[in-house]
Length: 124
Image (cartoon, rainbow, N blue to C red; front, side, top):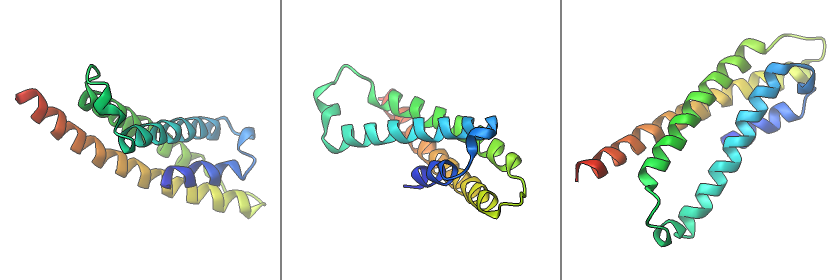
């Protein structure tokens, strides 16, 4: 839900005029789609029918890459927010920057728990 907020707040502005916001949009939409995809896989228990895939490693790689790229996107988003005559863009960009950092912290926590799960799986 928070990732959806990031890209809808940016999509409601003239983000296409600023390449930095294009990068933030790419990261936000890409990881939102992948997160929904993995959510469906886990909710339908599809992962139990494909035991050949090392799901703990996949989860660790996904969450780790999401954390790193979202951190970069959040920093780019925050540094690209400028005060303009149109306060709608400014407010949306500032809010998207805040939520990008919130999503980054969520992916960081998820990366930690994925690492713990992966580590306990490899020790067995």
